[in-house]
Length: 324
Image 1 (cartoon, rainbow, N blue to C red):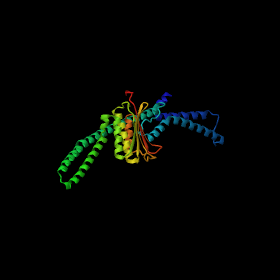
Image 2: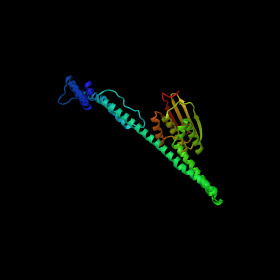
Image 3: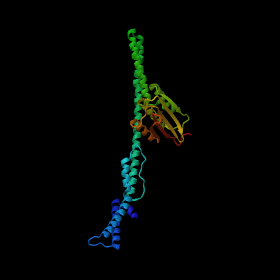
Image 4: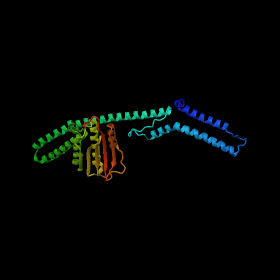
C-alpha cells in the first residue's frame, strides 16, 4: 500500500483500474454461472450487476485519489490574495498530497510577496507624501509668505484708489497659504510624530468640523498602550481616509470618532449618520485601508449602520512588549 501512495498519479490510476478489472474477471470466472451463445435474460442481469459493481468500485477508488485535485481547482477559482489564509487540507500521502502541499506553499509565497510589495508601495507613498509636503511648506508656502509681505508694503504705499484691490489680492493670497498648509498637514502628519496618536486624531476631527461643518463626537481614551509607529500611522491614515470619505460622499451631519482598548486590542471606530449604502463598493480607498491594516495584523470592517450611515472599525492587536 505504501508503494501505491508513492507512485506517480498516472501509475496509481493504472494500478487501481488493473486491480479492479482483474478482481472482476476472477469473480466472474469463479462464479457458478455460464453465458450461452445467445445471452439469456438472467445471464444479462448477472453480467450487468458484475459490470456495475466493477464500475462502482473503480469510481470510489479513483474518487479518493483525485478528490484533492478537484479541491485545488475550486480553490484556484475563488482564491483572492486580498483575503489571505485559505488553504487546502493536507491529508493523505503520495503525489496528490505533495501537490496540495506545493499549492499551499505557493499561496503562502504569493501572499508574502504581495504583502512585501504592498509594504514597499505604502512606504514609498508615505515618503512621497513627506517630500510633497516639505516642498509645499518650504517653497510654495515661503513664496506665498513673501508675497504677503510684499503686498503689505505695497498696500502701505499705495494710493487709496488701488488699495482696495491690493487688499483683495492679499486676502486671496492669505487663503491660498492656509490651504497649502492644510494640504501639507494632511500629507505629512507632523502632529502624529510630535504629539502622538490622540492629538493627531483630535486635530483631524477639528479639521473635519472646521471645513465641512460636521459635528464630531469624540471618545478618545487616554492611557492606551503604545502601538508602535507603524500601527499608529495605520490608525491615523484609516481615520483620515474614513473622515475624508464622510465629508465627500455621506451627506452626514454627525460623526462618531472613538479610540479605546478592547481586551488585547485597540479599536478605532469612525461612524456617521449619512445616507450610507446598502451595497458598499470596495473602491481604492477601502482597499487601501485594508492593505494598511493587514500590514500590522489588524482587522478592518466597513459596513452600513442599522440606524443609517456607515461604520468603519479597525481592531489593532497590542504588541506583547507594550506597557499594560
